[in-house]
Amino acid sequence: MDIDLGTLKSEILDYLESSDFAVFRSQPGGLDGMAVIMWDTDAWPDYRAFLETAKKIGEKLILFSSRELSEEEIDEARDGIEGMELTREELRDMEGRLNRASRHIGDTCSLELAFSHGANQYVYEIHPDWYNDFIDLCDEIESVFPSDEGEDAGNDGLGGYYSNN
Image 1 (cartoon, rainbow, N blue to C red):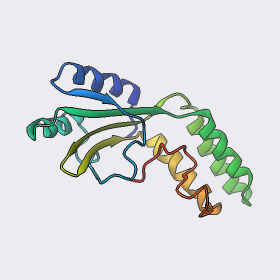
Image 2 (image 1 turned 90 degrees about the vertical axis):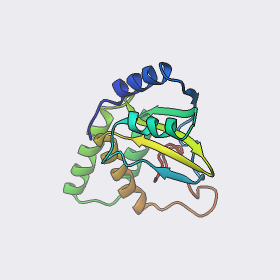
Image 3 (image 1 turned 135 degrees about the horizontal axis):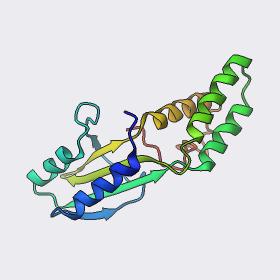
Image 4 (image 1 turned 45 degrees about the horizontal axis):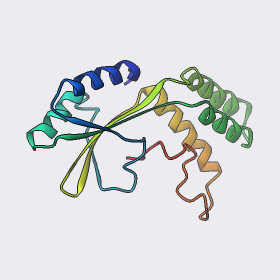
């Protein structure tokens, strides 16, 4: 869904402030490597239903994180495209997709709510369509330049911000 996450971010924070939840402002990607169960935001996009679930099981602490698309991410993708052997049509397609993403530099590209219950982290994560398209482009670029198993293993080129969950 192509939604304005900046507006949604404000709405969620207002909702949380008026609730009984304690809000812990976590860093994006802070749940990487943990046992995570994702909320189905496609079928149930309303964050209030997610928070109602936390409330019903007695959770009081909600982790909140958000992040904005950075110019560095765009530059890194652009550098990747320049290193690829592409036909003129493929190059035009990739550059067009990158230019569409670059219009969103500074825009909120990810919102994440989470709570812990038992040994699991339950996560509500949402991205706009334009960001999903950008991630798809980055995946295409990365498939041509796989990272080494050494020091870059596990580095997705996005500073650890994007979660494959």
